[in-house]
Amino acid sequence: MRKYVLFRVIRAVLTVLCVWTLIFTLTRITGDPVEWMLGDGAPEAAKARLRDDLGLNDPFGEQYYRSLAGLFTGDAGNSYHFRRPVSVLFAERFRATLMLGAIVFVLTVIIGILLGVLAAVKHKSAFDRAIMSFSVAGYTIPNFVFGILLIFVFSLNLRLLPSGSIGTPAHFVLPTIAMAVGPIANVARLTRSSLLDVISQEYLEYARAKGVREMNIILKHALRNALIPVITILGAQMSTLIGGSVVVETVFAWPGIGTLIVSAVRHRDFPVVQYGVLLIAISVTLVNLLVDLSYGILDPRVRDSY
Image 1 (cartoon, rainbow, N blue to C red):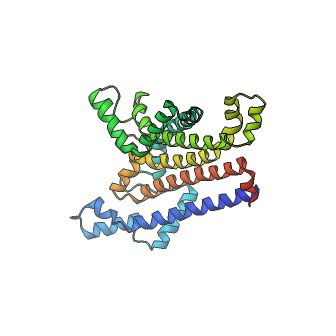
Image 2: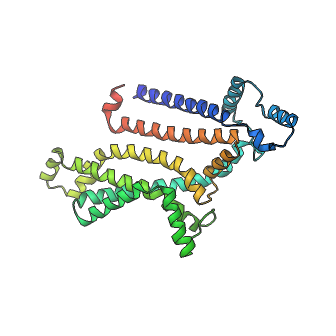
Image 3: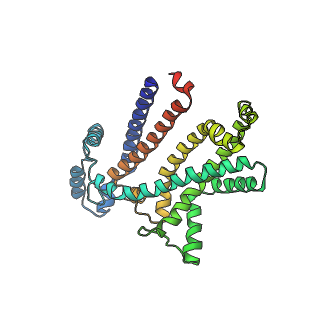
């Protein structure tokens, strides 16, 4: 198990470093932020002085080393647009994103697995068909499209819920629904199909022959074996939530890191974009690492292969 964990951790660290190198390179070739900050009519001397102050005239390797070293010392630099430390900007917005993502993830786990189990138990019933129809619809509709529809119906027409910002519990309703429907539908579909495969296995017939109730067989024996592919999809859904929050937060004017990153991209604010993408990469990599480690716990064959 120790070798398995060490291998996964090293791979996660290398993945994050590769992402950082890639985003650092790409931001440097998208354009000059000084042109946006000062405008086309600014004197060339002022532009050159600002580039020098921002360190943009330094060699590429020196800029890369300075930014990478700053990450390990807690110094992510200053925002070109907001004129404030990048780490402070994200610290102010991280709580809003974390709250929304945590609510969506909890709802995905509880409702998605519950609907999948009920659909498997009531296989080929009207309830099963309804869950599958919901799964197809929820999985295919993009969350930002669903969010716009929710705003149109519940905010503009019915005027029941606020369409944006944060403040009261009512502000959480629409963005939570917009982000949760797709993951819940996907988890429910996969839980159903995985549980149906396990229920038909021969080793469960022994428990049935002993007179164990069918629901106890499903919850105590079948569900654990069926959860391995579900955990995989939960990890993928967490990654989707982290990346998809950028779009949904923009739709609902949610004051999280998603709207901060979008604003930074518009203004070519390199430090903010780099740090934001890095946070998303670390979050996604950490989720995938936890999923991989859970494989080793649930299935000994995985960790024994290392």
